[in-house]
Figure 1 (tube, one colour):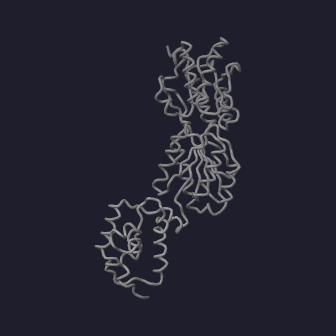
Figure 2 (cartoon, rainbow, N blue to C red; figure 1 turned 180 degrees about the horizontal axis):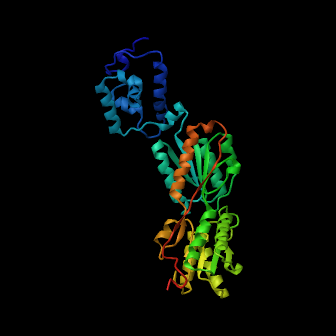
Figure 3 (spheres, rainbow, N blue to C red; figure 1 turned 180 degrees about the vertical axis):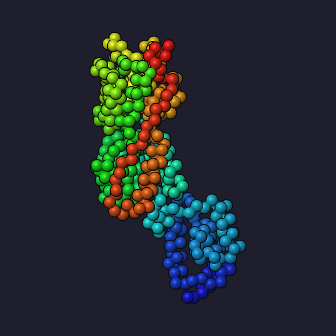
Length: 392
């Protein structure tokens, strides 16, 4: 043990400090300022030291809350802290990450932020990360595979501790996801089941949701029901259609194949709206009778409503319409869309919970234990559905 002279602190009124680790401690603490010396325009430790007429090391010790700060006079500590607030100083998180080898950052890749599905999921992710003191690095791939790959590379290069992917309905799998596993970075995907690729997945029980849609219309007395299925390439389509057929069989309802259509493989969410609108025009032209439409999702349902209104028909008086997702437009539209609610915000929270658990368990240092978390849907009844004839 040896004493550190009071002159080291320059008016810090220090007496003595442990000496064995003091040199390495001071080198670490000054690292932030060395990085900050670059022409960034940010307030650095040097600015505060000059304003207080103290050494950079003393300022570093005080502002970092290091154990050595107890050897600095209280008056000096307060002066340093006051000056830091006055100058608008913020610690350099990048420098800290170099010392700790932790970035406290989770990369969040939304495949398409224009898809209303993504917004509440991202909100849930952000809410879940805040209490854990993690920062979300959010990027929007804009449904472009090349952009998705680019952002994924950038997130890995910035040493994010984990990656959460919010898949839209036009999401394409990428070989780069395998690079995440090679780098031992935990990954969670929302809206797809990629457990076969060792990726933890969060999604709604589509089969159960499809059954809820069908049972609702059957309970109202509908028998002639038209159906707009999802795109063939979309993972959600098959189980949702299976649930609809299961509930129809239970109710003794047989579908007229001429009243069943399938959306094409789409490039953007608005295509669903246009698909629903086009479906109504085509089916009305055939003269086939129907009293209700089961739409693949809410945007498609909104397109169906638009098409019916343009044809001079009323919802639900002439035709009931049911959607899926419970996005905001379905709630505020006139009429409000009866729908199957995906707990999107809660799915974002769950994805964050799974990510934080993986980090806590140290799965980032070994093989990730992939699992499927299925959340249950809920029927939300609004004014777009009623008994045949509008309940009259």
